[in-house]
Image 1: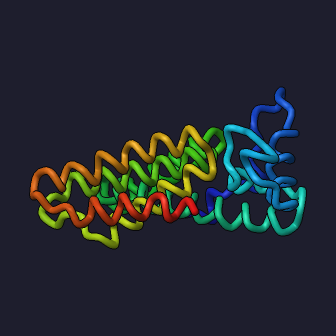
Image 2: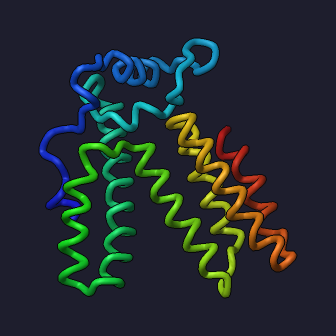
Length: 190
């Protein structure tokens, strides 16, 4: 399904805006500029991963791999839910339609937020199984990664992380996943 819906041309932001800022993200990554001292922007040091344009071969390749992986993960989550709800044929068709409609307007930060939201909701709904330390660490690492891609998306995933980790901890008085997640988040940020 991912291969069928992957666009032939790279996703481009609104055509009436310049793309110099996207090129700047690639230059900053390629040149090893430090965000905060050398460059200040709402997109983080990994923001170039959302724009697989060929400014530099290495950054374009990394961006294509990460964007493709995020797209595949999001599509897998959507397909799983739709197939379970609608059956295999209707679910596959609905997934194809969603992918075709969403792709032109959804960037890497939004894909990461969507993946994160589905994972957090799954954790909260599946209270029987609970949230183990590895899952808490994985959610924290994904939230930290999202923050390094784009500040606003990172704030959203950080807040979702806090709620997702805190709810089960307060219900069961099990603070281990909360502690692991709280410690993984700053470590993943570096």
